[in-house]
Image (cartoon, rainbow, N blue to C red):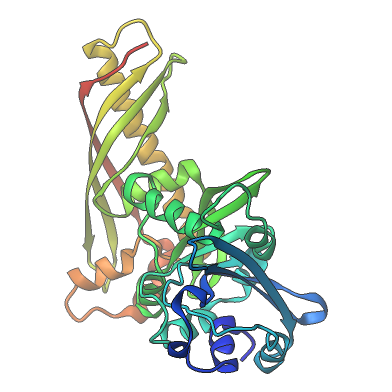
Length: 353
């Protein structure tokens, strides 16, 4: 198998973890995968050891090989068994993601010792270099990235993400996975967008603004802040944006068409103009409606051209069509007409400049 799991290999190298003092067992939070030299693959792991004085030591290891057995030999110098029960994040460089990642993910899914909610991400640049550069994060890069992605899902604009969801969308019909894109920028790591997958291979990406729109259209959602530019050059910041989304598919097996209805509610917490009047609120609502509709149409067209279905339109068609035929659907999907109707309601106001 071309791809590999460093963790499974490390476990094979050592004895029983139960015989170790728990505070001395290195804990693995994060693994990164990059292309190596001369056709090899490279894996980087970051380990944390907690001593009895509650001090934390973080160390990283990397190896390159053509095969999983070669990687096992490279890692045979690790002094202790590794605990993977707190495994939090799997990262892949873009070039690795473009070749396919399901073999690596599958090895973790089959390992009962691995955590059930491991996040998956793609890195602009080297996944290994991001892991080895600890920056100012005292808790280590693994726990930091785990919290960054978790907070972006719960309070930001990031769609749900974990290894099981990727696996479900990979094997499911009429749907495709998305995962966050991360980038190392000087002294910090940021989420810069979404990686789009066709089955197991990355085939495109969305930027942060597109990611917000994706979250609103994908399914009913409660999002974070959004800065909206108005036609007169003023800006409004919206908060507590909630979307209620409904997909309706007609004639799924014959001449399919799709309508996506989106109802949005949000509050203006900041406005750069002189006065937030009733007319201004209406203008904000109308501008947001146009933006969501226009960017949604652009995304649907992009997805159809790439032959991917991150909105799971095919799955909606299956659930609304008796005796649904996926073979016919896949042939027709690139040309299926999709309309998006948006209605925005602006609620109470907050701080106004």
